[in-house]
Each structure stands twice: as structure tokens, then as C-alpha cells.
Image (cartoon, rainbow, N blue to C red):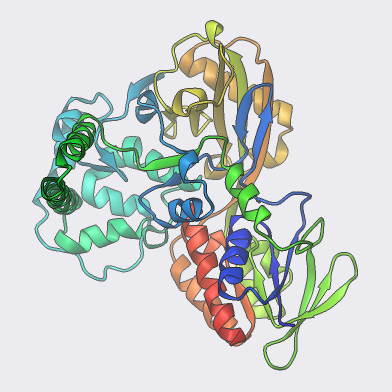
Length: 492
């Protein structure tokens, strides 16, 4: 029987297995995971009525892979969007929390009014932002550069420091003076290539989407009028049209019971005994005809027709049999972050949780951001309880998480909350989680190309890692499914 090994049972490994079994149900699949649970960074803890996400709490609905997979697994009815309050974002500014200007899309302002009235940027800074509207010449083939230099060129240093930098850098827990714009936000580069001005390009994109939606509405209305039973269908259409006018859908979605529902459903789809926990790959040896001999941490040795490593870059570097490949993988920078959750009595909060949380620019505090989980998502806390998440470490303080204990991190997180929302009461419970995050710095795309070239010389070995591109759930699913298709084709 054809045997395939997938190492790493995070969302990448689980998605790859699901896609491979869909293409080749006859394959004998072996999925190993060094931890004692599947899911990787996606892990939902349920305690005392609180739903706590160890890692990501949502995915982008605008990227189709995660919503499609949820629907395929029967999780469509469990999809939820942030609350109305949870769509408001605050930002720390001079020791206070101010609203993020409405209409910010990936650091690009799409509404002039909120930008002109925000206290976050001075009048000269606002004029510099509007200057992007007058960039006439599309930019072609500029090459890679930092996120900071890209934003400064379009919106100036002040908007970059207080708005764009915290928004974009926070997604990767990175430093925008080092992160690559090509490897982190290529969609912004594409907008620049269209018209030079990011604001004008985004306006054009939104206008085209609005026209497409308008055509769709007319088609629905026409279908309703052509139907003999049109009155109820017409009423349903106008109700839908009214909802479209009343609210703009959030780009984010989650699952009612937490993101762990996605992991549980994928695990349930695996063949019996295919998932082995507490086991990792120790070494790989290439054989003839794209076969591989694999040594496992439990001293077992087995042969496989293909191997897919769904591991962090540094973990993959430790087992690949090619020195140059290992060097390239290990050279991908990474930082360590911590998420500290506080379960608090709502009645004792120093202020209402009237937003999804806040972002902290450099110089405004040691925390990088905070999510007010129970305000953002439904059913995340018991009645009369509130759940708050604080982000620490990353590129802002690279050694903080490594050298601090959980209690020290919790004390710092509480101090940062006290400064920005007022003194909080003694938490009912505290959870602390640590993560390693890859950093796609300038030149990252070239490094990934070199890694892919080395892998081409090792047939039957593939790597699908969040270090290779976007770190979102849909990005991981897309790469994993692509790897599964390659394996299915390789097996014939």
C-alpha cells in the first residue's frame, strides 16, 4: 500500500491530510505530532464558562479557504461574526485610548472624514496622508522593501508611526522597519502597481465591487419578479437589501464554540490510528523512486512514498537531509510572543468594554495590543464575566517572553491594562500561552525561492510552513492543500 507521512498536526497538517484523503482515499496515512494534542497553535480552552483561544481567534472571510473548509466539514451553521461593538478598534495615544479612524483597510484610509477629524495625527500629517491621492504614476517592479519605507512613501512618517505601523506590524508581532512588504502584504504592492496611489486604487476596487453587488441585486430582483410566487421572495429580497444597507460585514469570522471546533472536526475525519501523538521525526533518509526512510523519536523506523513536513521552519531544518536547505530554513528569523488572558468580573471593570480592544504603538506601552474577547465575540464568557487578552513580546521586546515566568508576564500585562483602562480587580483566572512567530523580513521571498529550488532536488519531500508566506489560517490551508495535490500527482 502507498504510504504517506505528514509531520505536524497543526492546521496545515490536518488540512493536508483531509485534502490528500479526498484525492487518494486508498493511501495509508501516518500523521505524527510531537505534542499530546492536535491543532498546533489552534487550541480552545473551556474553563469556568470562559472560551479561551490559545492562538488565533478567527480567520478572514475574504480569503476563501477557511470558510470553504468549514462548510465542507458541516461547520457552516457555527460560523459567527464579531459583534457590532467588536468592530470598533481603539489605539493608545498619549496615555489615552482613542478610536481608530473608521474606514482603515490594511492601513489605507478609505474615508476622508474620520481621517480629517482624528486626534491621532497632526494637521501636517493629515495633509501628507491626503498627498497619496495625487500620486499619478503607477509603480512597477520597485523590488522588495520594508513595510515602513512603503508606508512612509505613501502616507508619511507620522501616519506610519501612529497608524499603519501598529496595524500591520502587529499582525506578525514584528518590526515594520525589517518586515518585507512583498512577503507580508503583497496586496498593497498590487494596489500600488494599479495606479500609484493606494487610496485611489482601493476606491476603484471598492467601486467595482459595489457595481458587481448592484448587478447581483438586480439579478435577484429579476428572478423574484419572474417567479409566480414572487411576493414572498420579493419581501425576502428587500429584507436582505435592508440588512446590506444597515451594516457592513466584518472581514473576520470565528466558530461559535471556538476555533478548536475546526481541529476537532478535522481529527474526526482521519482514518483510525492514523494520528500518533507524542511522536516526532528524528531524521530523514532519501531512497530510490522518491521514497524516504524515516527515523522517529520512539526509535521506530519506517519507509514512506512521500513525506510532508508541516513544521515550523527551525523544526524542519533539524530533520531535512540537505545542509543548504537546513541553513536556509534556520535562517528565517523568529520571535517569541505571549498571550495573557484575564477572567474578570464585569461589574468591577474600570470602564465599559465598548470595542474589540486596542493597539499600542511603540512608545505608548510595553504591550503590543489587547483584545476584549467577551465584547468582540458572543458566548466567550459567562454572565457577569469579561475576558480580556493582552499581547506581549515579539519584535518590540525580543527577550521578554524567553526570560520571564508566566506570573511575571501576567503581572506586566495587568500593569499595562491598569495604565490604559484603569485599575482592574483581582482576576478570577489567568491563562498564559507562548508562541514562536516567523518574521518574513526583506529578502524573504528570495529565500523561499531558494528553499523551493532545494526541495525540487529532493523528490517526495515537501514542506508546508507558516514561515513561507501568510500566517493566517486560510494561508496555511491553501499551502497545505497545494502540497497534498502535489503528493497525489506524485503517487500517480
